[in-house]
Image (cartoon, rainbow, N blue to C red):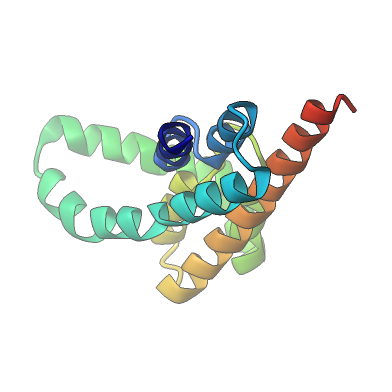
Length: 151
């Protein structure tokens, strides 16, 4: 059980799944659904400080490399294009709405990048991402619970 819970937490940290994959994985492994929710949610929340550290400190050094700079500009443009209007128009609520949509590419990674690009205050950005992650995790948790019950 501990191994499966760790894998669910790692999925929740991963940019390829986040809690959208971690929660169903853990629940389908037979782990207590409440424990899975808490662990995967907490793991997904940890992504925000890691992303902010990366964007503020590591990014500064890597941007000197041409390949990285081109890639970073591409990702930045996609983040602004995908979430830019919502964040400009709705600010805090826009980040919440963007992060809470349980679809690929709309999680805390993209929300963190968008908040960074639009110079959102860190505390506000953290709260918006956390609320969005919670709502997204809740949607996935309920849907997975219903599928396990056969509804």
